[in-house]
Amino acid sequence: MGNVLKTGTAIAAILVGAAASAGDAPPRNGAHDFDFVRGVWHTHVTKVLDPFDGGSLTETMDGTKTARPIWGGRAWLEEIEADGRAGHWEGATLFVYNAKAGQWTQDYIDSDSGQIETPSVGSFKDGRGELFGTTVYKGSTVLSREVWSDITEDAHRFEISYSRDGGRTWATVFKAYLTRLK
Image (tube, rainbow, N blue to C red; front, side, top):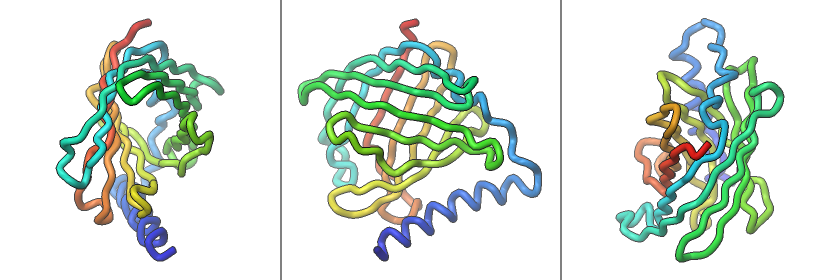
């Protein structure tokens, strides 16, 4: 329980710090931050199997990601299917915008477990999206950070990193390069 509380405190510090940097201004309207994900994409995924031990063990997969808006774009449903040497993988993500907070939440469901992972929360700034949460890695709760970057009309990058030290350093665990199919 202590580890979870420390991690929760670290996430709160990251999010409060981001809010404090905005001053007393109302949150910017980010309701359309995820509009770029609409459609069908080819995804090339690299999973890092040893992120805290050098990151030299990886698995690659290729597949398709499909994203569609709901609630007029204030929420997005994303489905992914990919194949690699380790087999077939499917997942789904729900993104929901909280207009009062000016932030997005991300809820991911892996088809193998059928369980919704702990949500992450964050926002976009200067064409880069960052959402933060927690996850369990090898029995310990760690911070997680999801980043959308290099966003163009026909391509973008998505990356997940973990931190065991309260967000001072990050180890990449998942990289996806996406190119638009339609």
